[in-house]
Image (cartoon, rainbow, N blue to C red):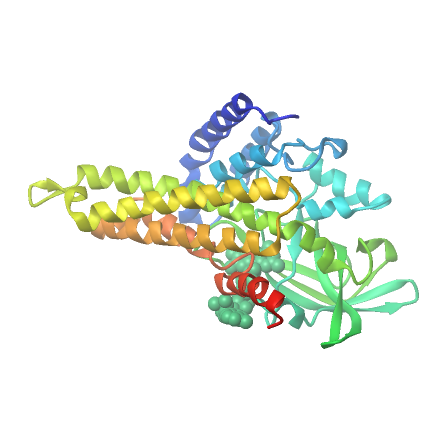
Length: 386
Ligand SMILES: Cc1cc2nc3c(=O)[nH]c(=O)nc-3n(C[C@H](O)[C@H](O)[C@H](O)COP(=O)(O)OP(=O)(O)OC[C@H]3O[C@@H](n4cnc5c(N)ncnc54)[C@H](O)[C@@H]3O)c2cc1C
């Protein structure tokens, strides 16, 4: 589908906004209270996403996806960002890494995910290897043509129990001028494979109801057809898509910030103290003004990154800048909103506290703010030999 004209984008915005407003937001409180999405609600969202052509909209038409252009995907991420991940993740956008599937893998993994028959997890983080992904202990050793996988992953998230996981594990080490460097390989591992345990992990207070899973591998035997891409090239495959993922985090943060800022502005206009709307006190009004300025800047950064990617000149530091700026912008707006709402900002009966909790995760997942700043710094110093 060619979504390049602004009229089509306007229609898409209206469609997604209505979907979020009428079929997701009404369930937010219940999901937050229960700490889970009732199965029938998740399935309803999934079914509507199919009807609206939003399911797997990020994947190309050749594989049965929606084939939406980047601007259209940005609209979806931004509108979905206004609600909780626990709900909009049911309207799945399978990871683009699956496009690396070849031969039988396409029928077994990629196409069922596009059709909504299977769900995947992206499993990189480990209890002792978060920011330092290269510190991973998960490993696979050769046994004839097979591989034997051992290790553990945690914080691996998704809306519901998956059918398989894309698991990153060390399959050896290469000598480099900076010393030995792990060879990391991506494996497709089916839930139900002997030795593979996938169970729900601890609950996050951000996006309550969006599940995290713990994955344990105890001598899991995998055939050569379970490698995604080439042996030793797992990070290259992931890296092709991680950058855009960070841009989508930025777009999602802009959507949520817009919602929170609207709420705070309305409250500041209507809540009166000392005989005046609290927004007329400079301390409150300037918070709104700063929020509006930073939100506009964040939106422009996302637009710029989409244009860079389209032109084939987006670098790691571009994605890192968007991720840091947008997630920190959201954090400030969410915190200021709680302040503007005063005591009511912390009460469960209003959504502000929930949006504030949800916002907090955005500075942590997909690479923390500190790691993004390292990426930016490196891009500045490396050319100077430092
Ligand atoms: C709800 C949720 C869902 C998630 N989903 C997934 C998923 O689906 N798949 C997946 O693979 N992972 C997932 N993650 C993991 C997430 O990406 C990690 O939590 C994140 O990368 C940080 O790793 P960590 O939690 O181990 O923190 P740590 O790496 O232990 O970091 C702790 C603190 O130390 C700082 N720090 C670490 N190293 C440095 C450094 N060199 N310089 C400066 N500061 C540093 C960090 O910035 C952070 O502030 C999820 C996490 C959460 C909470």
